[in-house]
Each structure stands twice: as C-alpha cells, then as structure tokens.
Length: 227
Length: 411
Image 1 (tube, each protein chain N blue to C red):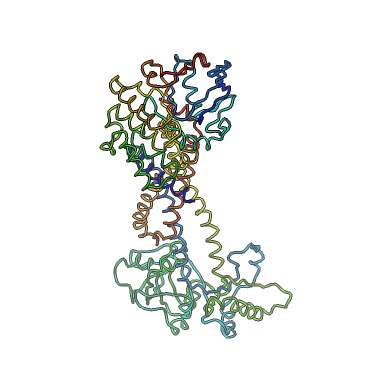
Image 2: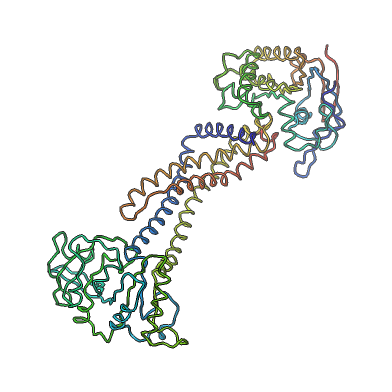
C-alpha cells in the first residue's frame, strides 16, 4: 500500500526579487514499511522535501497524496491533525521541551490528539519503556545524555503510532557510538513494520536504509534500492 | 466543549510551569495588575462608602421631610420671580399647622449664621437653626447629653441652645457642656443638650454636627426682625409612601392660606430631599466616573505590561511553539495556551490586589464607612480575567499564526 505519493511537486521561495526553486518537479512514491534515506548536498532541497513530506509546509505546485488523501491544499488545522496522527518527527537537535520531563514530552502529542489522562499515561510509559528509558521518566532533557534525549524524541515520534517516522539527521549531534545505537533502534522500529524516512548527508547512516533517494538542485538525481 | 475544557486544563498546567520558570519577571509583571485591581477595587468601595455616608446623613435629617420655602432649592426657576414672592411668616406656619392633617410633625425654621463662643473658644460661621420643639420630630436625632428644648422654652423664646457634636467639641473640648452658657453676639444662651455624632461631612454645613439649634422666637428676639426674613416650614410625612399625599395636601393648604386663584401659579415652593439626592448624584456622578476612569487607566497600564511581557515570552519560546506545532498543536491550542498564561498571571495579580484592597479599606473605614462587598470581589476577579484575556490575545495570536518551519529554525 502506498502511503506517500508526490506528483510533480515544486516549492519556490521568494527571496527579495529572486525566485529560488528549492524543489523542482519531484515525483515520488513511498510504500508502507519502506526504509528510505534522502541524501544530497546542502542546498539540494532535502530539508524542503522533508518539510513538505511532514506536512509542515505546502508545495507551490504539484499534488501530494497522503494515504490517498490530497493534502496539498489542506488548511493549517487539518495539517496539524495529520502531523499529530500520521507523522512522527525526529530532529537533529532533538527539539524537546526543555522545561518538561521525558514523560511529559512523550505525552504531549497524545494531549493534542485529545486522549484522556489515564490512557495517555499508560501509552507514554509503554513507549518510553520500548526505547529503554523506563528509569528516566521524570528527568528533564538537561539531565539526560544526547543519546537519551534522542530516545525520548523517538518515543515522542512513536507514541501516536504514526504512518511514517520522519528523521532529519537524527545522529548529527551524537558521537559515532551513540549514533550507531540510535540507528540500531531505527532498524528495530522498521522491523516492527513502521515506515521510516531518513534525511542525512552521511553515507554510512544512509546505508541502514533499504532505499536511497539522492537529490541535486531540487530534482531527484537517483533513486535506488540498497539491499 | 469537553475538548475546550481539556485544552484549558493543559493550558493551565503549562501556564504555571512557564510562570515558575520566570519568577522575577512574573512578579514584576503581576505588580502592574496588582496595583490596577487594588486601585479599581478601592475606588469602587470608596464610592460605595460615599453613597452610604450620604444616605446616612440624609436619613439623619429625616428622609420623609418636605420643606415649604419661598425658594425652590433645586430648580431652574428664575431668581427674580422667586424674590418677588411673599415671605413666609410665622403666622403662615400657625395657620398651616392647624389645617394640616397628614403630617406627623410640622415645624418652622429660620437659618442664621453667627459666631458662637465659650470662654476663649469659638466657632466662626456656625449655622443656627431656629425652630420649635416639634423640630425634633422631623429628625432622627439622638443625644449625647441633655435633651432638645421643650415646648415651654420654645413658646416663651428662652435663651436655650442644643449643640451639634462638632460645635460642642470645639467649644468645650472634653469638658461637660450641659447647663453651661455660651455666647452668641454677646448674648448668653444656656446649653440644654448635645447631639450624638450624626456624621456626614457630605452635607457640608447642613451636617447637624456643625449646627446649633434654638427656639425660633429667640432668633427673632435677638437677631432678626420677623418682617425681614422668610421662614421655611418643615413637614414630616408619616412614611415614605405618604410623602406624595402629604405634599399634595400641603400645596392645597398653602394655596388657601395665600388665597391663590385656580389659574395663579404657586408663590411658594415645596422642596424635597429627593432634590438633595439628585444634586448629590449629579456632582458625585462626575467624581465617580472620573475616579473609575483614572483607576481604570492604572489597570490599563498593568494590562499593557502583561501584553508586553507576553510578546517577549512568545518571541523567546518561538522554537517551543514550532515543536508544539510539529507534533500536532492546532492554532486554537496555541492561542488557548498563551491566553491562559496571561489570564493566570492577571488572575493571580487580581487576587493579590484584592487582598491589598481589603486591607487598605480597613484603614479607610476610619474616615468613610467602606468595606469591600462580595459583588466587588466577584467583579474584580472577572475584570482581572478579562484583562488577561484581552492583554494575552494579541501575543497569543502572533504565536498561533507562526509558520512551523520558520519557528523550528529559530535560534
């Protein structure tokens, strides 16, 4: 079953009088339980593509179907709902709420989907346990190591059982040992049947994925299997 | 609805966290609202206190009283027209008293202003009311010492006086005044009674505390010639519901005494304390509005402080807003969150301000009968909530409409 279907997507930024074509006619299909790495040098459009895939941004033109539903011209609130239910974000800089403990950070997406307290607490705890943080529930991000912070972020991404996990340079701020552990965690998550899209410029990170899409100047340069 | 309540609850938790994280800032911001709410609450209680004081003062004069006078007290009738009216004489009063059925008391009055002396102590410009013993029945006076002058003293125009509390205090300090003699224009008068404090400075010189009472005959004997001055007749109705009927009867009798034809205008006026109340409302109404506007301004300044700090807070937490949006917060959610935060600060400030106002009103109570009423408390709470919502709206709206991509990139 295909989850993501992009047809001829362009994204044009207006920088003063100059037009920047960050994405220039991207067509792409991603199926359920795929493990995709998006690669490219900086300025190739991978961040823009990720923002559009993650429904944080909308394309200037083209059609984006998410699970068969056209999201290219959805309202902000509808997009917020899609992000909440269908997409789990993992960022390079973790992006945890600094004043909230691990537990509350993971619980937050469930608050936004309106799940009530008891059930919420149960799911959040379960998810944190699944990433190996059952004894760090009440630690604030500042009291956790980089690897642990990224695990909290991964738990937060997983907690609503989304259709895709979008990870933007998830190991970029970690040492290679911890980064390796995080990649193992992603591999395990993929084995459980999740769909993962990984944005990276590191070959050895991209090697974990089963499919590598290379971008250059806003276009798909190559799209190949990686077995 | 339950969804809103849910968001409100989460908003509150977030708000308390945010306030705790920036204690010093929150305290300073709250201070503006504390002062604003305190000022508004105090002003509204003070206004209430003035009203109560005025009403008490009015009722000490006798609230169901009518005053037949040559002059209309509170009317736009032309001065020259009234000046040409005939004076009211003591004989008019006698006739009136014999004819009137409805009033429970009828008394003549004549006001003069004199210096009163006792030894080296004196009070300049004291209002002296000349009347009969029946005057007492038109008032609600209580006595500290002694009594009002009697019918016999009144009839025979004896040199006796009853002193208002303030006059007595000035002349005698803390000494006993009963049966002592005071001097007015060199003439000796025996003090037969001193009134209890009636206590309303809002009535100015008409405050009984500042007056001296003596038989009207004595006034005419020593100070005024009867032909020169017009007296007034005080009538007390049986109760408030009888005031109108008593007034109609009085008008009727007066027209008969004056021998007016049916098409002639009244050549006298019947005044009511209602006029005094209207006058009070007119004057104090302006003070009330001005007072509330000025204190309202201080609350506005407090609100602007909140708005300012909320803008700063939104800017600082741009990234947090981006994160929240990325994981699914809707515009409404972000809006609710920041408005809740602003309202919480305002509400806390409002409650502190209210407590302060209650303490201060206890101090003010020494001068004016003020105490913060339950409705003021409720109103203050509602006002501080609304202030928070209004002050929080603009910053919250900026937060709500942030672009998540931009917000996440913000350093």
